[in-house]
Amino acid sequence: KFVSRFVRRASVVQAPVMASSGDGDLEEKDFDEGPDGMSEDEPLVEISEKQKEVLLAEEVKVLKRRSIRLGVILLLSVIIAVAYFVLFVVYVARGPDRNTLFVEGKNESQWTYLGNTAPPFWGSLDVDADFSACDVGSLQSPIDISPGVSPGFETVADGALTSVSQIVTLPETISYEVLAHGNNITYFNCPQANCGTLKTLLGDGSFGVEGALSELHLHAPSESSLFSLRASMELQFFFNSGEQIVGIFSVLYRSVSVRGNQALGILVEDGIRANSTTDTVTGTVSTASLYDPDSAFFTYSGSLTIPPCTEGVSWFLQRDVLGVAADEASRWFEFVGYPGNSRSLQDLRGRQQTLFTSTIEADFTPLPDLTTST
Image 1 (cartoon, rainbow, N blue to C red):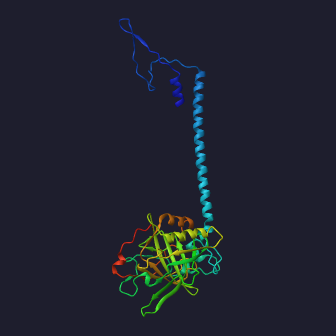
Image 2: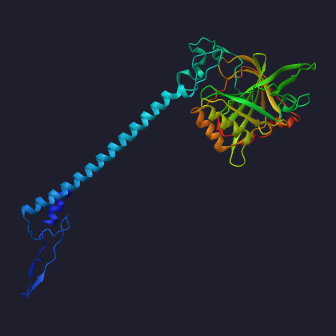
Image 3: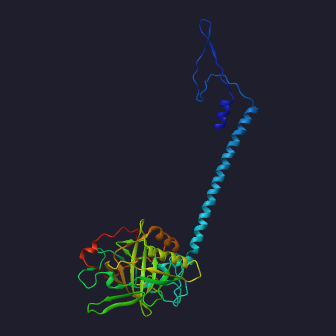
């Protein structure tokens, strides 16, 4: 239609029409214009057929060029979409390799945080070790602790225990060897004789949980949550009595844009480096900024958060959330890969959670802003 109108306009010339007035003079006569902007009574002078063919040929060339450009754009869009899909499939397919831990001496099969070997399937994996507790256990970790909200929560402010320093003793520095079992779990094993101790008092003055620090685990995002919020990272201190893990002391870290946490940054760097080399990676880190000995703490009875999800582990979660540089938290999360190396929150199942503090008001003090909602 456009070409037809173009040819019609281009193929005519307008000639003024003169009409005779009553006194014999000629004068120009006005005519109403038609729908195409031309007078309905204007005489038309047609252009040659050759000129029409030239005009039509030019219009066809323009339309062809436009069609070719549109086709190229559509083709590129399809190629980009296919490329993204292939990259996604490759990423998912590589998930078990990037998120794999081999539990030495217990399990030679893979379990991950992604796909059909992720936490919801741990208990049903066909492996030599018994992971059934991950499915049927009644005292599993991690959990959410919400003072004043969680059922079974209580505050003890007049007892012998009021701060972390009364249960956890750490040397000024810890020397470690990084044991890389795949991106999702990197152990910082403590081979020295005295890496730290965990001791809790019972009502009769005797020790309850007592163990020696054996290793540290770094998670992103945090596994434990406070007030239904997860932090950017969590560092777990494992305490053993003989071969058995009897207690876990845990600290949460939130991302901050200002001064970060140098000690945690060292662990991040060494953990990443250990997974990219066959050489043994060792290091030493100051413990001063890894925890707050003056903080109050929560405690409850739980389990390991990794297979075989063994229960009967006493948890001690530092109440005060510390800081970590945002770029270091992002580096660790990118290193372990989506969706991180954190197990989902487990049901309380009527468990008691206790806050040991020096003041009764501490359990309602607002926490610093955390980063990831559960």
